[in-house]
Image (spheres, rainbow, N blue to C red):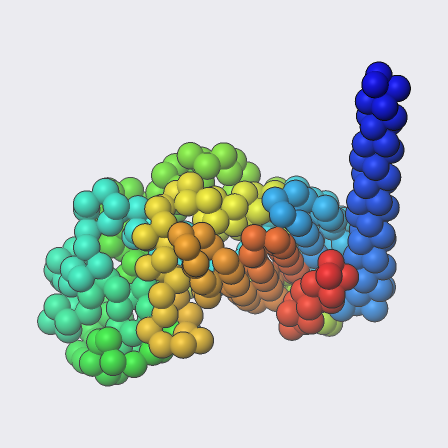
Length: 337
């Protein structure tokens, strides 16, 4: 009897060891193939940036490729923060839902309730319209706006909306601008301070920086294909830069409802109509769980992409935009499968 039990234990151990070795070999194979993909992209000058791949909640690949600025003197490393373009709009959208959960606003509240100095059209725009980009607000005049006060002055002089709120979709940064101003009115904090103190630090994100200047260390500087470096300028404020680990931490916090609850997350994923952007970009939920979260962003020659589902998370950030992040993410998915 003891001999039989001993044989069973040996067999179980052997199977476990074989399985462990198999998965270890598979992980090594995946890492090698991902490395070949990105080394080739780097060598061909089609990717300069940082990448993170996680499988079922475990980071399996995380690397930096290329240079931190146009000088070619400083190499990127995993600690570098990148501008993530429109993905940074998630922080104001989540901030709005945090205040909703605290009972400080309702999605049906009119914008005029919080910013009464705006013209009478603000009575017609509800907060939900800002989140779904259906407000009817005009586009920001980027050539004329150099700071928040310029844009607010422009809105104060705006006599009418482009369309009746809630009737059409128009991806428009004035929706983002007013979300950030509403957060400031309610909290008596600058939006930038609110993001750091009330959203990021509570979930353990310590390295993020909002609107970093040229002298901020460990912030990648963007440059074009001719290797001309961009001059950082914020026409409107409130743009968060993240490193890989903190970006991943943010994605996981959304998926696990660490900042806002299931209902709020589901509301942020709800578009005005199919394939339209929302406060979280795009995503789906089923049975109370996030089944997908996809968001891309670009600013100057920065570009970023987040793809997240229960099995796989891909984070790509570049400071030398090549408009190929979707292609790279598709290659990553093929390697993983």
